[in-house]
Image (cartoon, rainbow, N blue to C red; front, side, top):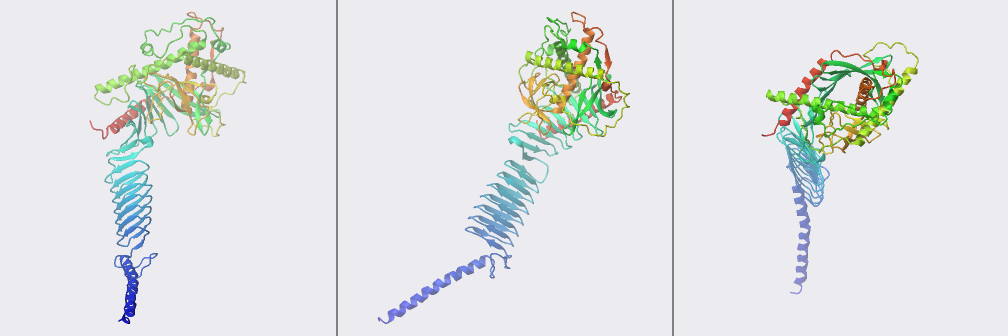
Length: 600
């Protein structure tokens, strides 16, 4: 009995040893069965009954079928079917079907179907179907039916592969919606509409009051609405000429020409059925041209000194504005000097009054247009006129602002005096060559425009403008508003920052700051000089009358400045009328687009 025990122990030991050998073999067989069998290697696909798939997993769970290629790492869970190619990392979960290609990283969750290609990163969640292509960075995106969507931190949805009801993120947390008719509407983070684009390419920007402030058409026309109902339309044509209308039957046309080898611009103004022309020099600065004003005439010796100097204790002056509607309307904004100690102060009130009268006339014309369209049951057209209210409280042109204007007036009188003296002392020039529509061929030397002169900082708005505010909306500047330039160096877009020194009701608030183009400031400066020259003419008519001191004898006789001579454009009235019709059509197009998709 004792001899049997050793044999029994040996037999038991052999059985245990055999079992230990069989377990790894069984596990090895199961592994090869699940991966397609047939001695395949993890680094190369092998033929099998399930389509020769290739799998490489580390600590994760993987199921593949139909020739798919899958790589997972870090405990990820991946399911692919139908020849798809999937790579996941960092615990992500991915499901693909129908030949799709998917890459996910950083714990993202992705589902694709129907040949879609999807890439997500940074915890994004993406679902695509029907051949869609989606890229998202930390965003949540859903597309269906062949749509292509890109989102960066925004939420976007499009359906059915059509233009209908697509939404995209915009700067500042707003969104853009495309309607079924192909028009788009953008809103800021507060839900205010900032712009509308029509399917033809016309874009309208909105003011903070919710009304259209400016329109930019595909052919380059710009329409600016003022808070007072005024409308300025500007177009540049293929030949470089411009048409600018400031109301029905008012505005100017502009053409470039050369004379005596120098570049000029001829501008024909049309107002009240009458046309007159002014000439401008063509300056060149930072790759672009600008206009600088040439006086149409120079005054005789001593007149500029008289206009620059003083009038002793001062004089009173009756302008006759007391019963004028415009004067009562702008009573909150403008107070004439009670007495005038110098011609510069008289000229200051003159040019302020001219701007306000023009602004009031533009508002009256806009009101008439609105009333006519309303009675005809048509589109009112543009922003309604401000009847004296407005978003801001009343702002008065302070004595400090008026003093700044008077200082600019004196500076321009001195500059024109020096120009007249230089022309008088110059040798007689030969008769100028005939005007030509072709500009001088040589590019002139760069000369900074007067708008950037460090000593000239005060500007009076000449035409309606709509600068953009920080929230994406626009505010309006009307003729007669006063700006102070606070930057000396333009940015890459040739804009400089300005401060609103005095504004009318409904316009950009006094004290606000924003960028305005150097060219717009130069236009304001040119208009300022034109009005000073007109004022010098009125001063010459009134000197020695109604208590105004007399100018030196013979000084009020003027002579023509050849550089300031220009020919009147005979087509100005017709071109302005045509432009108004085109602007009306653009306004209607924008109104339709703005109401597209809005339920009543």
